[in-house]
Length: 87
Image (cartoon, rainbow, N blue to C red; front, top):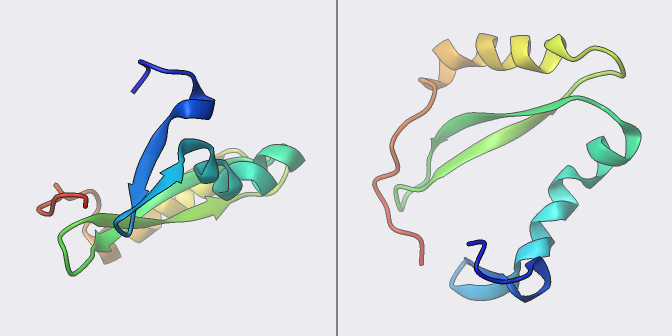
């Protein structure tokens, strides 16, 4: 939703309104340290919504998290279409 400034954007998490910028905490450590990071899908939750794992690599090792995500894919089934609707 680009219709308003980031400071005014909201998302729904577990049925509650949260600041859009709350999501930045999940990328902050890797971003601050300049580390490569990839998010790989794991599964769908009991409500049919996707969840995944953040994989962080070492400095200058940009391909490592991507390769780890590739190795996970046969175990997790890769990306799936969400069947649930966010609350």
